Length: 504
Ligand SMILES: Cc1cc2nc3c(=O)[nH]c(=O)nc-3n(C[C@H](O)[C@H](O)[C@H](O)COP(=O)(O)OP(=O)(O)OC[C@H]3O[C@@H](n4cnc5c(N)ncnc54)[C@H](O)[C@@H]3O)c2cc1C
Image 1 (cartoon, rainbow, N blue to C red):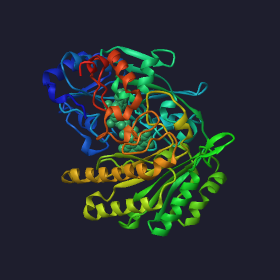
Image 2: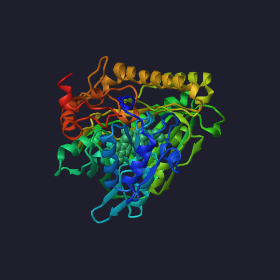
Image 3: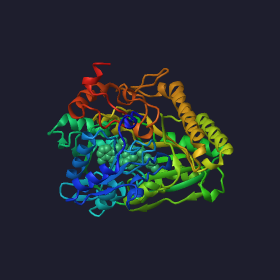
Image 4: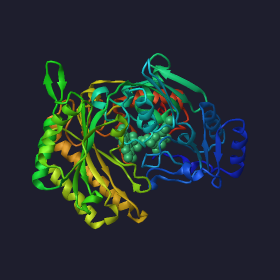
């Protein structure tokens, strides 16, 4: 996607020696392919996203990052930035260029309990944030899988367990420290370099390397959470769809639009083949209620009544809400985004199950794959408006996540993900679009900000920048022209800088 690696020269041993020299007075590590730590630097959550960097630099501060960026710019080398390494599209990897590996040595999280602020280094994982904040009785909106990176997830928007209460991660950012394409280190916030701040909140990977995120946190109690498994039988699916439609329906009230749980419930519900069921398809439901156990039990009672075959719901420490999905490193995967709206149509769910079973019956290697519907109270995400993120609205993310082991299945598994995503698109066009305000129906369904209804961080293969950034694209181009006129940061939903676009 938009990589210019092919037109750039490859890193040589001479470059590795020079970088080692330039960074010799620092705590950064420069790792050539034969150095220890190199393999860890190029490791990604999805094996299919790994590429052999020419050299990896593991910085410890913004100044180290600045040295590496300037060296890449002056020497015409491709540059990639690794945060948590979870992008499945290879956009944090480089073939033969310089990799800035933030994850290795930049994971510190400092907490200011009085101001409830979290100072997070650019390579931190959400587990680092969750634990540090929880030690002070705090939490913020963060990824639902603890080993995803703060970097990519935040810069592209960020949905989490607390989104119903506080919106996206980018609705809770206070400031950033970012190293720009010219090596300059810039802070941005609503008050300082506010254009850059706006751009970083949603299209952030395009403007530099963010070495510090400052996030607002909130007092946090224990939380009611767990996994339930249901047999994927027709009648069970029918009851589950009805219960979900009831729980996540947005209703007009004198206090404004809200759902039954008042922003406290979140669920991830989908088809999977969990090992305890011996390869049988099940409906997996990860459910969270941010409140006391008795309230949580009431909220999820309709699901208990359906009769889960496994029920692990309990009151637990907040960080464990983001560990309900296991880390699962070492497989190949290609995440594909989709979207859905309320109410979910029962027949559509049966159709998806048919397609899921049909594919996995012919490709056993892909048995760990998942297709899921995410559900939360969408009101905050739809109505808050910090940053350049354009996918806001009363729709929800769905997730198509093929997972497999053999490289020879790459094409088939990606095609499966595209086919399922297309089914979701058609469903929104034919059914959901009529049910939700602010959405234009028809062949290309778009939200109120002119973007396709897809979360860019879930869909890094097929969608194009103008569709993901919608009406915000022209302003992003202007800011890009100012901060990265030569388009150095161009790997994910690249933005054509304004100057260059006028020549198109
Ligand atoms: C298992 C799994 C669970 C997920 N769960 C969620 C979820 O709950 N909520 C959600 O919103 N998304 C979720 N995602 C999607 C996630 O937001 C993206 O995969 C995102 O790209 C991950 O960021 P990362 O830093 O881990 O990835 P990386 O692959 O390291 O980076 C992704 C992109 O961001 C850039 N980048 C990373 N850090 C920085 C930085 N500090 N400065 C500049 N650029 C940077 C990289 O260069 C690259 O372009 C999930 C993905 C997976 C695979």
